[in-house]
Length: 359
Image 1 (cartoon, rainbow, N blue to C red):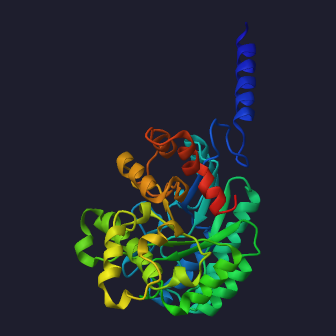
Image 2: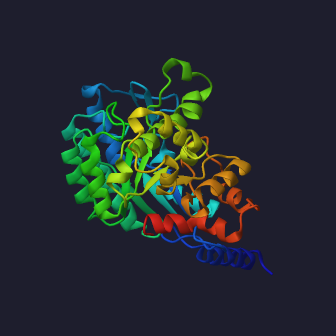
Image 3: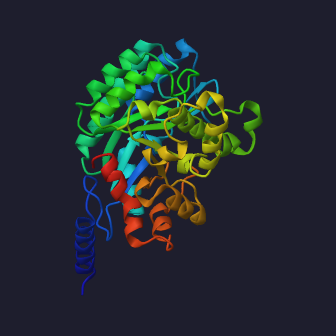
């Protein structure tokens, strides 16, 4: 066989392999359930540009890191807008390599609450429009969670109503606290009412965890501060009557639910012994299945225990992409949980998120 013919056949084989492997617009072929990553983060370039352009006038500090990436600093927050958070094509290649069919895109720090209401609304609209555009371009690969300016709840409700008409938006991303207010603040109730009306879950996510200087060493702000923030959000929703007021509102919690699942006995005891909670309609443990928890806990025994506490239908697969701390083979981690049944693993990898986000 001539060299030219060998090169031709090699090129033909490579082209055939590419066709079999799919393209950026469709998930790569794999056996097993459709895998949905319910916890991933993305910054549209338009959002970054507006933050950097307007942020300094409102207490932020734009800059560059050692690699030349744009940064934005606020009290308690230092955001790096690295390319891995912005580029959809490289993200799809990662998803294909990891066996992930679909990601639920959401914003993370700095979110929009630091801005005055008008700018917060503009930032939210930029993110929501870009997220919907990502879904329209890659409808099988991406859906998104909307952002809204909760520092002005009336504007937030209008933006949620608008975003609810955009293709691909399936829930609301919010911080674990807004402007120093916990999530049981009555000003936020119209926001929850609109989400309940749309059938949208909410996803409280930390952006500026507690702890201050004591948490700055050893990445403790992320390791310990974030789970505490998640627990505060869950406690506020339970104790503050949000889940009673909005019985159809679903809540997804990151970091395996923070301290809610494994601390639920203490939540119940606290309700029994705290005078201000004597009129609760049910013990906190009765609300546990109003929550979905993601799988980001990095320990097989702990995650298996979480499934037994919450129920396999209340745990969703998540990666925290594009965090540097993420598990690089997350699907394999779930598939290796042999103490769970194949059906339970399929629910976690995709079935539960498909139901929650209507995918």
